[in-house]
Image (spheres, each protein chain N blue to C red):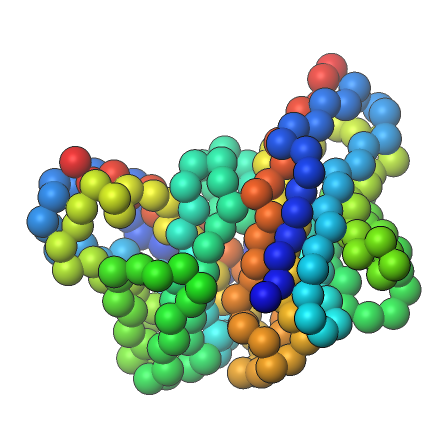
Length: 115
Length: 116
């Protein structure tokens, strides 16, 4: 069975500082990894995904994520945080073809950017 | 953002009522999904569909049912609502083919259901 862990319930960062939101995963095959962001009373917005290739993936709103196979991690990063980045962030994983088709989500990390 | 719509956005209803949550997308995606999310918590897959007349149960057991008569429409029905059904329900769609897991799922805004 596949699983995702987001070890931090909340991350606090000062505006302008770099941010990291951590994610580790477990799958039986090759992982397909996703990051989504959720603003209050809204659905999830897709940020980026890793399928194969370059371990550094660039996405929307200046976010990027680094895939590390040996550490089974896919941490979300941004060089300079904005107050508007404050939201709930979800990491998700899918197994390689043949597994269940839905996404398996982590519990989410609240990102709070302080002015 | 993706063109995927859910109605109603908020619903407060009494125990025992039958309800249908609507989800529609205008992108022609074959694959559609329903997830359940308690406030501030992770999402759990409850139903998915690979196309017309295809429906499958997800990882989380649910008393709800779904149908897929048209490509663009994937409604979820609860025959008799109970307080334990109180949650947020999120619909998603993707343009991948069955068995291909690299496609991106795009989410609707969600329906927040409260059963009294």
